[in-house]
Image (cartoon, rainbow, N blue to C red):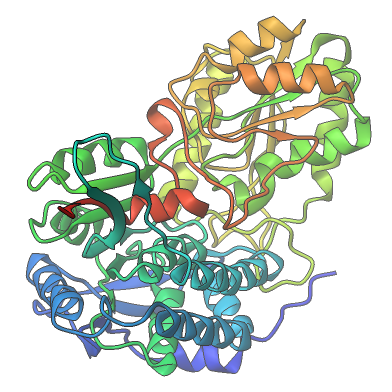
Length: 497
């Protein structure tokens, strides 16, 4: 039974006014005065408007971040003081977690069960990297040069770091580009998607409440083609971290050449999820469903290519279609909803177009498609969709759909499925369901992908590196990998003679 949860009062108050961006500790409108409408994907209504930044606004943000880094206290602040501020912010995120979750649900549509989890993970991420602030070390190296030479290294912050964030899981994706650079002494500029800036702007208020110096965290709202390009090509930005499409990632690499800035990219995926006949059948059904339908399939590492061992292919696919009926599609503020809307009318049209292409190429849609129920008609809803009789060369098996659509492909053995899994330009995620440990290791080692889950899926933690092979990205986020990505290593030689 549908029961809509009342929107958190603080969230309602926050979205009741036009939203500004924060540059150098001040809340400002775009210099051009332009604004962007922010719509609720559950019903298409306008929630509020946000400032639409242009190059001049980005220039101001970079100046503020540079001043905070070079003249302000942040990079010279003692590590334990940075850690204290990050821990205080983590507590504030946790205390305001319900509001942040409601803002995310309102803005990008996903059920509160999902967005509450992201709010909690955001607090955990700040706590994890607060610990790193006091644990940076250098090395001493024994020298073979004649005489007495002291040879050592130290880690130093890069400077101004930009994060360009997508619309799926906007709060959590932004936090992953804020925490590591702050821990090691950088200042940051974050550009959220023009479609989902709300929770990040509320986070900026919490940053100020925690007592961070002005200019350490700057939020610039606007379009990727203007504000995003300006950040990626700015000669005074030292690092860009981007999560989004492969096409935009390639453009960011080109833009970064202006000053050879460091780049971390987490891009598209077309992940293979392999179901062996010896798998725990019920667990495999659950994993196969969650791997692609969670977050409405708007996940870069979604298990969207489902390889099923031929001997169980027909039965498993039939049961998967039946299992997917358990996923209630609806407004994210409805307690019974499991799958929320896609982000926009444009994205809905894109996903439905892929379903048409798949069927024209010979695939069969067992279940799913557009949600036509009266209470969903105004939103951007697509039902969990299972496509059968898919060939690995089909468009729906090779191109990232970014919706709740799984393409099921049969296979006969380990070597074949490794070959099929690797026949893609992407390499971000992968899954394996089997009770045979030897088989699991063989296939996991054979997959050309940055992440492999065995008998589970969708698990990430701040201490574990995340990123992709091939056109799924460049570099890694999380753990020590992020510390490497946001620091320079300086080697110092001292002649003691």
